[in-house]
Amino acid sequence: MKSILCPTDFSKNATHAVAYAAEMALKLNARLLLLHTFETPILYSDVTFVTMQYDFKILHDAAAEKLRKFKEKFFKNKFSNIKVELVLQQGLASARINEVAAEKKADLIVMGTTGTGAAERILIGSNAARVTRNAPCPVFLIPPNAKFSGLSKMVYATDLSDDNLDRVKAVIPLAKAFNSELLFLYVDKTTLSGDDVDIKKIRALVRKKVKYPKQSGFVCTDISVKEGIDFFLKKYKADALVMFTRHRNLFKDLYQPSLSKKVSFNTKVPLLVVHEHDSLS
Image (cartoon, rainbow, N blue to C red):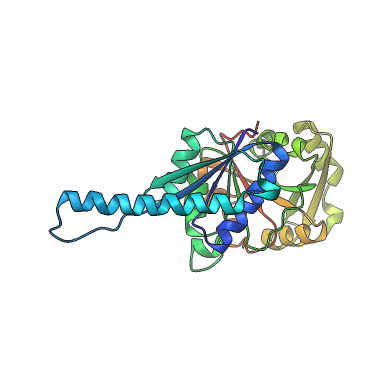
């Protein structure tokens, strides 16, 4: 992994995500692209074009100075050796994040979540939701309380379909870099007793599909996929949850259609979202 893109609006949650991204960049010796976006207000008046241009320059220069000072203050001491590139863009944050990720060929987007508000905001935050749907690379969503301590255990939630297990290829380079153990979790809602689940068969299937030495397979029987995942994450003290989404549509295709409305990401465990086209090499 050569480059990590991390957007910031200088809020507490965003700064927390920057710290997480910096820790990853330090470990991976990766370049960190620090992005800040600003929007120009819509003016309904008879001001001249020259005045409009002047106002834009003021906003641009103020945002640039704020970004420069943030970098100067944040990336010192422990993070002083990280290669940081400042990127300033005007426009809607979610659109610019994905545009910059594609233009700069970022390998990963790391961003904070809000967990407040309604609808998509309850899940992961509106900006994070829009970015995740259309991102050209994997997106790592960092909850406010998540502390970086490496990625020794990464839980991959699977429905055991071929395309789901095939996308593990995008995660393996990251797992190798952190010497992670991949814990494959299948939540079985059809039975309430593990006695009827052929765990050996499922583990054999995963081993056949996924060529990675440090892996384990688990089956959790629960009437709720959300509860099953939450229980497993806590029990095994996971450092990250990995989920695959088809067609870049997080809210319809994460793991299974109904899960998107039930899973709350207001936990201490970061969520790595992988798309069909992604690679973390």
